[in-house]
Image 1 (cartoon, one colour):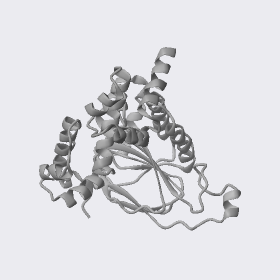
Image 2 (cartoon, helix red, strand yellow):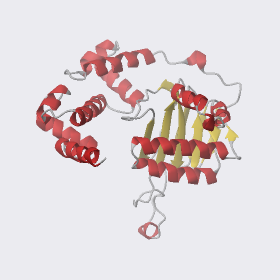
Image 3 (cartoon, rainbow, N blue to C red):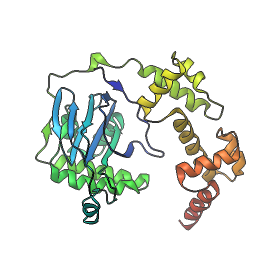
Length: 309
């Protein structure tokens, strides 16, 4: 099966991407990307695929994968747990309760060029060179390290970008210090000749979105740019970005709106227009969806913090 190239978009005000998934069952998504990936899987068991490595995995599965290394996980269904088990604290390890054991996956995706730069420039990080070299083949870590990494990932969930950066360094240090590392893919595995040539199409589409997010953007227009049918384009975009086209555009527009809200005192209706929203009520609704507060509350909250500083 040919691996697909995933497009990784860093978090707002960050050089890398953190996210947390929760689901009933993990389908095999055989893919690769030019970023390093640190992946912690909880409450799950099944098959792990990294390059030419295929093996069973279980709870507290912690792996780092190097750039352009195809990988994927396929889980087996978890059994329901009883109410008694939940009351006894045997539900989710994430501290939440659910009548069904949910699989939880924490992921950090780190651009290779950025990580190489800080490791090369900071003498304190020199010990990470060996970790990054081993990551080219994929590395599995001990359960003890995975449990420690779980605490770091949970702290990332509510941390601001600066604190997340510190936590990322802490996570990398944990991985480097594990003496029970296990290399996964063989040295014989190569993927360079099998790269996905549709990457250029996706890059072209995303560049167009970034250049024109203030304007009306249609799926038909973008599909034509990628030389695809509209239906095919929707499936293609969701598979590569893990977001629907509408989610991607709205998230970008809200990120731009946040910067405008904090950098000037323009009326919120003006900022709504500048960021491509067709009406103020839609802007307010989307802002609450992504930020959890209204635009005016967001501006007031962060302006107060800046004055306090």
